[in-house]
Image (cartoon, rainbow, N blue to C red):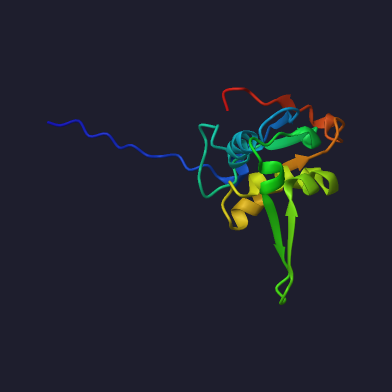
Length: 150
């Protein structure tokens, strides 16, 4: 007689998700490598309870976003585009100008490019809090430093 096992995969429900808070200091960090680690946490892929169609991720607070680093010539060659939908409505901004005007947007754009481009990705991106300076208003949540293994 054969021994039959029935294996089931647990699918996490939205009500079962427990969210943690992490803080990351972006000083001297490369934008792409940091964004990759942050997107893993926002999607919840670092948890054993990860379910791809449920938002199982944690909150991430990024401080000192104005001190991020690009490698090579990206400060002058990387461009951010915004299109209004009208003829001649394409606006182009270099990374150096973006750092002067809105330093938080560099990190937000990098992380958004690594998340799913749908309503789940937008929900995951809403858990990202980026601040140009060292102070943030999320002290009450007691964010832990982001582990280095992520």
